[in-house]
Length: 327
Image 1 (cartoon, rainbow, N blue to C red):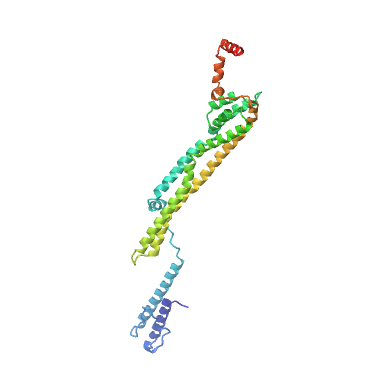
Image 2: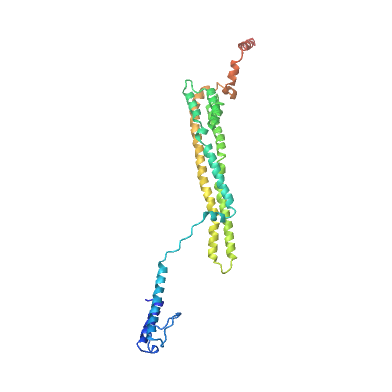
């Protein structure tokens, strides 16, 4: 079925041709004289044959041109969607984007600090492990004084734990294990101290983003409700909503990496203390021979008492022995 412009042109051409053969236009019955709403006027009976033919050709050409234009509009590719400007979107996010950015800087700073602070060579120096291993392979087992001095030369988390256990030598094995657990918990709390700020951002950043989104939604609905009739309210509301969601997106972008980093650092600390427990528990059986026979303190293990004893004159020792025998 022909469309309206082409149909009108054909009707007009047929009418003009009928009039050019000498028959009055009024006496002939057109196929479809005029359609409702059409602005095309049919030619009158006074038009000459040549003019009528030219008019018919012109109308047909216009109808065909209109059909071609409509077909081109149908097959024309859709317009490309403009790209999102993230910088402008972040600015449009509002004042709450500032604390969210601050949270991200906070996470990055503490992540770098814990990355370097939880290195194994810093917390459990290989030189300390190697020296204690050499002491354990000696005949007679690990000398507590030599082990304590080695820990003093390599200050670290591992040396702190081992020194605390060495100060309990001579006491029951169960008490040494209890001391090991207590010192591990105390040292682990020190290492967790700078992981907790990262864990805090896991909760704070999304809440700030949600607060910014709620604020943006309130403003978007307020502006839409108070806009004039001429404004496209649907488009205005959609724009306000997608801008309001920026803060939630930013908050999640901070919280998700923070959760991954916190989990990684916690696992690193647990692995360190697991290896440290295994190392110290391996040395405890060598110190069981001192149970109930030896009481030590920091000065004894550091060698200060030994130095004082060797410097004491022999006469003084003999005099004390004589006094004791007299008593």
